[in-house]
Length: 544
Image 1 (cartoon, rainbow, N blue to C red):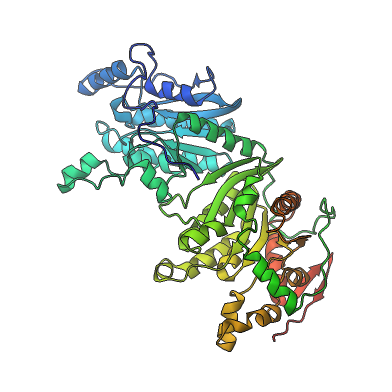
Image 2 (cartoon, rainbow, N blue to C red):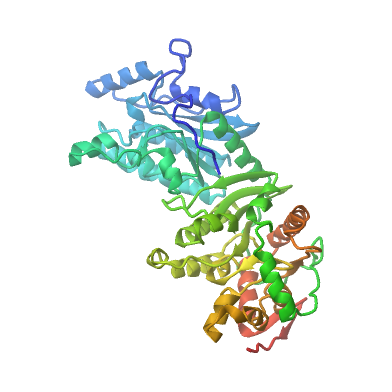
């Protein structure tokens, strides 16, 4: 989680002109770029814009050029971050409030298409009041073309990273400013659809204080982080580091094929003997130990982590964590239950599942494997959750994850209770920690339903076959992660073994036939069959 930043943190604001007036003649946008890009690496892509030769508007453009030092409200080009080549879109707010006219739109559109053609990551740094009023509707509709070009860039598997500067409002925020795979913002930046001055003029009252500030929007899952330029530079370098490690797979097969003959680097563990009631229940209790490692400890072992916050659409639930991560030479999107956060803030609700679906989209768009981590005591039970369509969000997670056009690995790390667990379960490869479990409800809840008392939970845990060994036998999981001693007693060793297994399974899943094999896996489970090597055997299900 990013630490709070004081609004007094010094940084170059696009509406304040040069950081050192009289000493740096460059437009403020290029001064900002110099703080983020490698020194001296920016190269302009711009050609002179076509502007009217005379009239009041031509005079206004001339004054804007003289004041800003720029020839238009957007500057484009390329540079480097930590040595990596990137394309950049820069708003120049001191040129007519960064507004988008026809020439501005043409410049931005051309730069996005060039970035796509040259397969460059695209970084956008908007600071704009929106459409240029002097040019009206013709300029307004050109926002669609810019947004379409950005969408095509993302469809090509190329990253689009947005940093919202002060201020970003109107049509820019409502088009190319809100399409980032990741979105950060400048400290204390004004970010909103309708500028507060326009709101007050239209409605006769001021807009509520603080609502349109970057920090407020981060709390509500609209932006991922609030960062000054030095930390933004580090964040962008981390993201590019993760994406550079991608082994971009080919498009998934459209027809089922024979599973690859190559065995995983380390063969899955064989199933231990079935656990009895005296053994399964202690495992349930072990997964609830406060000192048992969770998702936070797992991510701490990554070489690079970039945390994201919320849905990107105005909702956030800290019980579900979303991040980009690199483990050695393996990069992935991570979506998982954070049981430590759930203990503090409550169980996962609809916003958490919508955040999970954002992670699924990111994996597909960035062509990264997806790692889901299951460790939950269950979903939120409340009026808010029901009104927020909790059950529907679980269903949509299952549907989208099952058909995701990216390799998926699932790690059943500890508790796996109910729909909140099922929502992150469909995968090409699934690992279960030795003491992990999966059940329709916590065993106490099942006991209450069947026996009107939670006292028979240990018995129900056995009857429902919730333990990891049974899950392996049934074909629900592919591999057990041994716990020579419980994870809570050897957290470092437990996490190291988990990371090693994940790296192997992510590589194996990436070489598979996704999502066709994933769908077939669960079709066979539904049909009462499971895969054993290259053959299939019937499994008879019985109930106690």
